[in-house]
Length: 209
Ligand SMILES: [Zn+2]
Image 1 (cartoon, protein in one colour):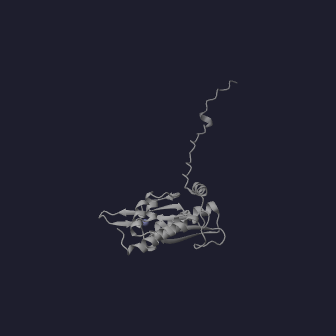
Image 2: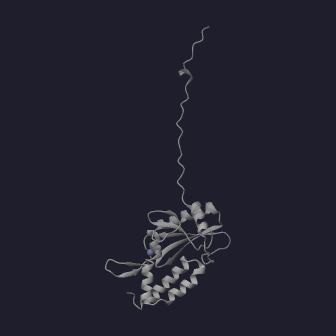
Image 3: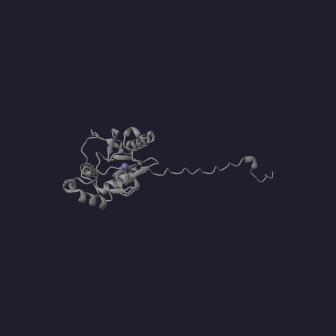
């Protein structure tokens, strides 16, 4: 059971989640809905949306949306992945090609993000530069649901990390995913070298004078 003291914190996180995951035109009604819930309704809501996980000791904690994305419970537009992190398309991007790099572990401080994850984000930034030719690409860490993430944002005009976001259409995201997904490198097929036959080895009929 959620205690009265937990309610404001949970609601705050849900409101954040609404801001980042819901289309703009649905945000206001969702916000009002979340704000109107009492503790019992809130618990039911979290349970129904699979936002609660029951720990081994039976206690319930709120599940983090990024952990759910990593585990695949929440669908995302994945463009790359390694053993430490995944890279997905932001569904409310600042600019075309805005990517979120999400550490697979629930890391709560940017200081704990392993260097390798930053290099992975740099690799994604380079790919964005090659494909979209922006002026620059910003990488900036952020924390939502207590989970550190890295925003990788192409700058075409004068966008900043605080610029207005727009809701991307599913077709738009699918196309972006296609162009940004790491393509398997074409295999170089080595042509077998054809040995040139040396002249002396050629059998030539002798000329009969
Ligand atoms: Zn998490």
